[in-house]
Image (cartoon, rainbow, N blue to C red; front, side, top):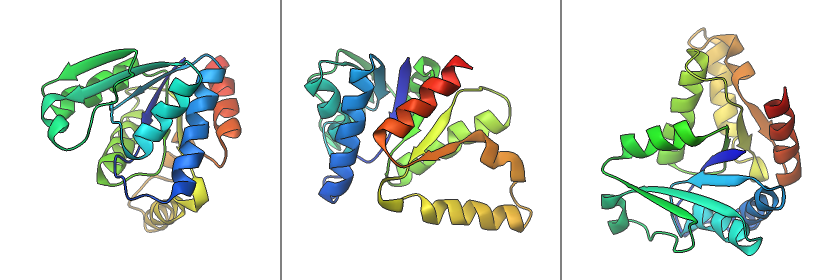
Length: 181
């Protein structure tokens, strides 16, 4: 299975997040899956890639040329795809995905999550979407979604479009179950 992972590139992240995402990368590789991601060497993207590399797993990195000025490219990608734009990057990552895992991140990660969530809600794909909720990172966002459902801005069935997992093992267990069904 190709698992597209979205997450932070920032370096100033508490090690508890990096350790959890490194373990997620290890678990992806141990189970024989491939990670598709933004090709970053830093932050949680780098942590996931290090976990996969440590288990000799397969990594497909997708990066626009101009991003090289903002973040280093992971040098152990099995395959590296260069793009011209972020839109092209997101299109390729989406098309290569059998499932999506969103680890903690910033505005870029939020953008990626909401794009694939919107596309799923609109019936443009039916791929599993999982939020990896390290240290309750996603709880505030889930509260905002819940509040906007209550206020009528978001349809209540949007929560059927994604799941929340707390551990690497539970994340992969659920993905594998959803892909088989």
